[in-house]
Length: 234
Image 1 (cartoon, rainbow, N blue to C red):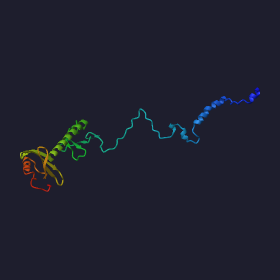
Image 2 (image 1 turned 90 degrees about the vertical axis):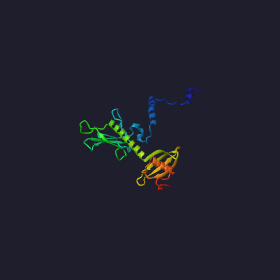
Image 3 (image 1 turned 180 degrees about the vertical axis):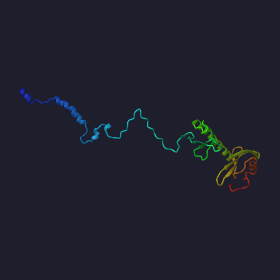
Image 4 (image 1 turned 180 degrees about the horizontal axis):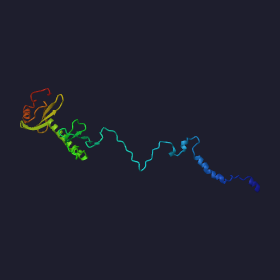
């Protein structure tokens, strides 16, 4: 085969890329990563450029935002010279009706009447009352609480009485429990033996006077209702 014949059967080679063709490749690569022509314009924008309600950025000088407390039924605390309202108590400095001085009353939330009313110190000007403060308020709360506790103990003692007597060669614990009622108040008289077991119980008038004599007579009578059988007996 001659040289000319070999040239005829030679496989044609790809044209050599020119320098401008090689420089166009990056531009084609950029076009392949772009969105289709019919894509929404907003998709081509960076995220931060999409229109939205922007929140102003905080700076070091901006105050911290306050969080409003949840509404509740607790009254707001009040601290003034003549009125304090805090922790379920209200302290109020009032004019003393008996003289030219001042008085203070303590009212517990939910109560109609004050738990404590007492004299209050005059101020430095000898005319106006001394302003209330935290220390004075704490003392008033402590005193008023003790007064309420004493009243509760006295009320319990009036409604529930008990004594121990000896009758029929045995020791008895006799109790009288008064049930106050606006229309039909009554009292319950009960007897307990030495083992603490209830032996008898009857209903009596709310003004029944429990003492050693009446309790002993009730036991000796076989626990019959004092004064005879009444409408409260079963």
